[in-house]
Length: 180
Image (cartoon, rainbow, N blue to C red; front, side):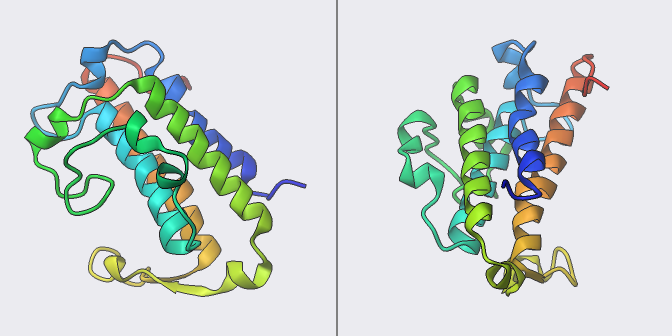
């Protein structure tokens, strides 16, 4: 039987397909004057972060990126202070030029891998508290979470935050965001 969160994780790792299906390459790479990100960067960052943080940090397993050879399919020369783009300048974000189909395939691969990991996660392991030291100043009170809650935060919460950002940029482009 699939994990109770499986359909939700599958959705948040499929949903970008819906958000980008009508976009031209220039729209995927457009940066609003008041915001450094692009749709392409937001998507790459979202799933690269979920992959590294869930697999590497929380599950102590190889990331999908490393395990399945995604570096050749999603080459990013400068990644900032993290493997997933934190700390990049506006110019560095603009320089990221990836194939959107590869980004979408990666998103699905990350979601599928997280779901597979959840199926084998024991109740004891899911309940273990993990320390998130990088949250102590940004999100006081959320720097210690049960492992499952931390997985949900990175696989769904952080993901939905950046997909909202994608919808904001769509709106700035004069396009409708979510279909509902």
